[in-house]
Amino acid sequence: MAAAVLACDWGTTNLRAWTLDAEGRPLQHREFPFGVSTLKPGEAADRFAEVQAALAAENLPAILCGMVGSNLGWQVAPYVDCPADLADVGEAMIEVVPGVRIAPGLRTRGIGGAPDVMRGEETQVLGWLSQHVERRHGRHVILHPGTHAKWVVVEDGRITRFVTVMTGELFSVLRRHSVLRDDAEPDDAAAFDLGVAAAGDGGALAARLFTARGRVVGGGRPASETPSYLSGLLIGAELAGAPALLGLSTHHSVNLLGDAALCARYARALQARSVIYQTYDGEEAAVAGLFALHRTEASHDA
Amino acid sequence: MAAAVLACDWGTTNLRAWTLDAEGRPLQHREFPFGVSTLKPGEAADRFAEVQAALAAENLPAILCGMVGSNLGWQVAPYVDCPADLADVGEAMIEVVPGVRIAPGLRTRGIGGAPDVMRGEETQVLGWLSQHVERRHGRHVILHPGTHAKWVVVEDGRITRFVTVMTGELFSVLRRHSVLRDDAEPDDAAAFDLGVAAAGDGGALAARLFTARGRVVGGGRPASETPSYLSGLLIGAELAGAPALLGLSTHHSVNLLGDAALCARYARALQARSVIYQTYDGEEAAVAGLFALHRTEASHDA
Image (cartoon, rainbow over all chains, first blue to last red):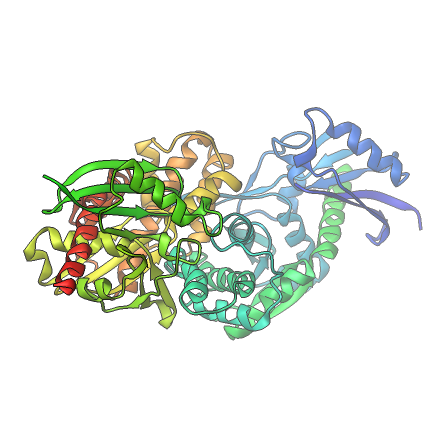
């Protein structure tokens, strides 16, 4: 079947591109190392032309999502305020060159009314909603783990609110730059589980973090356990603290959506906390979301 | 009056040395840049000889405290377990060369029974206790701000328990290495106060931290406010969360003990939370503690 659209998730560190047929099925997939953090001013258009050429997609309509729509990217696609659904995001896309559109991110009133934002995850969530018609009814909680994890509440097909948790970034900076730094891989399941337990109710995180140090220098545990313990502690604290910020009871279930390895880590912590969950592939959802946005465009053109 | 003792606080980043007279009054003070983090293996004795020579203190008894007693320092002075008082710490000092003694750090059962540790702060707390006889009765809470802030409970002259909060280190790594990095000085009082308020009950810290990003990219605030806001947020979260970890009510008062500039920052946050506090100079307390430890030695020798 012929390619109908070029779909791109252009984030901070890389660009993932697919050509899709008229039913949204992937035909080709390519990944490029030029995330928006590597772009020189004005370079986005040329880089995108390389992507089009690599996929022989010069004549296809294109939908882009992610940080490409930030002030570090190609052109700013202003945030859409929650609640927002597929049609709202589709209408707010900006056309940067004829036939090439960038999806906006979302903004919500978060903790204490402070603004919270996302760019890219909204497309995965909208894609997840589009993958099965029954998801467009009722309330769902979607957890997208990552550098800046997103907890997203969807009600009757609309993203009503969300909160960002800097779990991945805290893990990264503490593991590399703090007294808790250690080169070991975070693959010690027993130490991870102890970290999850040490998260307790998620309060006093800056004090709980020092237990990762105390157990080594005051308890004789090997420092090589620290990355796994730290990962469990940060994820456990996120699971303990985030639901209340969204007004959710502790009895909600969670739809994990994202990278498989990271979702598996969260799944282990959710199990330890007896939370019901299901895991979904983030890349498939991104493709579905970009295609759904393309279809909103098509319906407007008609 | 003649010098009676050489007192040294030898920490991670520097060494502060005083000669004291027989009443504990400082005669000379010198600071040296060779913290234990800069020491090559086996180098401590030579470096210390430089200190003795610089203060013409080769023939004085010497008392050292801080990280010099860790496995990164001169020789390990094993932790003393809480509860512990001046006599307990004095008895556990180790003699590394004749007349030169290193004070041990303290260990306690912290969050969930996990070990917590300190090295150096115990000497300041013991010094604070020695400065006025009435402090040796009743219960006091001492807050020593820093890279690893210490909340210490003293009861009838004994350090009964403490908890470490990584506030300073989180501030440092986030300010330098995270999406919240910004070169501005953290001297914007209004932004600091907003950060203190944003700390709320101290829960879900990894989510609250992202408000520092959301208010810039989603709220139009200048990024130059971020260091001040971040400082307020982290200190506010510490003040909200630490007391419960020590079984303290929210109605306790706090004795701030440490660096004047850092104590002023904590004082501002304590005021915002309507906590009663008083501030004391950490360096004077360190000198008093080292002298008090010297005196425990003297009484043993007698």
